[in-house]
Amino acid sequence: MTSEYLLIALTALTGIAIIAAAALRGWQGWLTLKTRELDQHRPEIEGGAAGGMARIEIADLKERIRKLEAIAAGVDL
Image 1 (cartoon, rainbow, N blue to C red):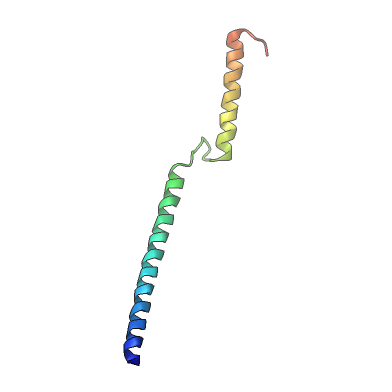
Image 2: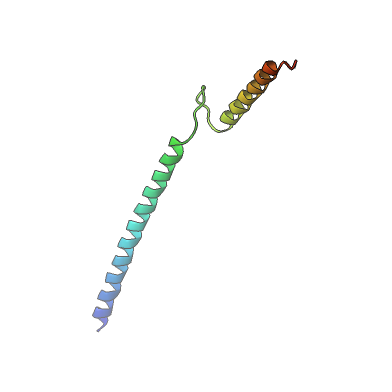
Protein backbone atom coordinates (compact mmCIF):
# COMPACT_ATOMS: atom_id res chain seq x y z
CA MET A 1 0.00 0.00 0.00
CA THR A 2 2.72 2.45 0.95
CA SER A 3 4.80 1.59 -2.11
CA GLU A 4 1.80 2.37 -4.34
CA TYR A 5 1.45 5.84 -2.79
CA LEU A 6 5.18 6.37 -3.10
CA LEU A 7 5.07 5.39 -6.78
CA ILE A 8 2.14 7.75 -7.43
CA ALA A 9 3.90 10.60 -5.58
CA LEU A 10 7.17 10.09 -7.46
CA THR A 11 5.32 9.92 -10.80
CA ALA A 12 3.43 13.13 -10.02
CA LEU A 13 6.62 14.85 -8.90
CA THR A 14 8.41 13.77 -12.10
CA GLY A 15 5.51 15.04 -14.20
CA ILE A 16 5.53 18.40 -12.43
CA ALA A 17 9.31 18.66 -12.91
CA ILE A 18 8.98 17.95 -16.64
CA ILE A 19 6.18 20.52 -17.02
CA ALA A 20 8.18 23.11 -15.05
CA ALA A 21 11.28 22.51 -17.19
CA ALA A 22 9.25 22.85 -20.40
CA ALA A 23 7.61 26.05 -19.13
CA LEU A 24 10.99 27.51 -18.16
CA ARG A 25 12.42 26.66 -21.59
CA GLY A 26 9.42 28.32 -23.26
CA TRP A 27 9.75 31.43 -21.08
CA GLN A 28 13.45 31.78 -21.94
CA GLY A 29 12.64 31.38 -25.64
CA TRP A 30 9.94 34.05 -25.41
CA LEU A 31 12.34 36.45 -23.67
CA THR A 32 14.95 35.82 -26.37
CA LEU A 33 12.36 36.53 -29.06
CA LYS A 34 11.29 39.80 -27.43
CA THR A 35 14.93 40.87 -27.00
CA ARG A 36 15.56 40.28 -30.71
CA GLU A 37 12.40 42.23 -31.63
CA LEU A 38 13.54 45.18 -29.50
CA ASP A 39 17.01 45.11 -31.07
CA GLN A 40 15.53 45.14 -34.58
CA HIS A 41 13.25 48.12 -33.92
CA ARG A 42 15.88 50.30 -32.26
CA PRO A 43 16.49 53.30 -34.55
CA GLU A 44 20.08 53.82 -35.57
CA ILE A 45 21.30 57.33 -36.38
CA GLU A 46 24.44 58.46 -38.25
CA GLY A 47 26.93 57.81 -35.45
CA GLY A 48 25.28 54.55 -34.41
CA ALA A 49 23.60 56.08 -31.36
CA ALA A 50 20.00 55.20 -30.58
CA GLY A 51 17.19 56.43 -28.37
CA GLY A 52 18.08 59.83 -26.94
CA MET A 53 20.30 60.76 -29.85
CA ALA A 54 17.46 59.99 -32.26
CA ARG A 55 15.22 62.44 -30.41
CA ILE A 56 17.91 65.11 -30.44
CA GLU A 57 18.47 64.68 -34.16
CA ILE A 58 14.72 64.83 -34.88
CA ALA A 59 14.49 68.06 -32.85
CA ASP A 60 17.41 69.45 -34.83
CA LEU A 61 15.72 68.55 -38.11
CA LYS A 62 12.49 70.22 -36.98
CA GLU A 63 14.42 73.38 -36.12
CA ARG A 64 16.04 73.38 -39.56
CA ILE A 65 12.65 72.97 -41.23
CA ARG A 66 11.25 75.85 -39.17
CA LYS A 67 14.13 78.09 -40.26
CA LEU A 68 13.71 77.10 -43.93
CA GLU A 69 9.99 77.82 -43.75
CA ALA A 70 10.73 81.23 -42.22
CA ILE A 71 13.21 82.00 -45.00
CA ALA A 72 10.67 80.91 -47.63
CA ALA A 73 8.03 83.13 -46.05
CA GLY A 74 10.44 86.07 -46.06
CA VAL A 75 10.70 86.37 -42.27
CA ASP A 76 14.11 87.47 -41.03
CA LEU A 77 15.37 85.41 -38.09
